[in-house]
Length: 333
Image (cartoon, rainbow, N blue to C red):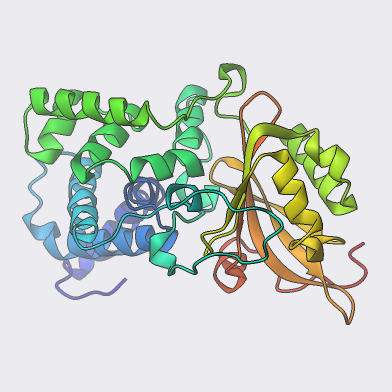
């Protein structure tokens, strides 16, 4: 952390430790508001820097945690004021016929909702119900839906429904009234209600490890019949940074055996991303072994069916962030 107008030497080490305690939850908050992993990191670092510089003016009228959330909210609002809304391919245009090899337009990284490691944004322990809410609220579909809310509605919904802040606490943070907070929350809920985010309540907040195991087995064997059996009727496949997406099990299979046939013979390593099933995919290399191809996040309906296959193809960014090796040797069979 850059030390500019820092506290005195006797308190600097203690302050750094006290600020660092809140990094993970602040990163989760900023990620939900901004939709980008790197943007969230930058926002939290800016929050810590502003807190460090202004600590001598922190009068303790609120908790350190609340003060940091106030700073982080302002940092995020500043960033959102000049940024285009992050999207997913499904929010940009219609589906593409799977047999066409054209991948669509290539958009820059700041246009996409990005994946994030669970360890960067979710607590390792806590109340099971709160942890379930946390996992649901970083799923790709939910984060993408949040991006359709105005910034203040976005913050209100996350603070009230994910972080469980009271209306009074939220109003204090945003310098507004309880009535305004309740109105913003009602409007945010109405917007999210149009985004088809429902999942089976019995599996809400869980990662379906058995479903992931079946998917990886079918995918590595490239058994399309077994794979189709796992897909929801409305399953989609998409590959940021391209605008391409295909819809329905038949089209997903046509893509995999057509333009995507190079994925045959892939190997996969599991990771923890967005509270969801996820893995790093490695394609077979001509010289032997396997090379990085994409970070895959699977979405499901909570009832044993895959609803989305999102492959993030920027391996230079995502594989290091998720601790994935840059190559699998030939003996990894």
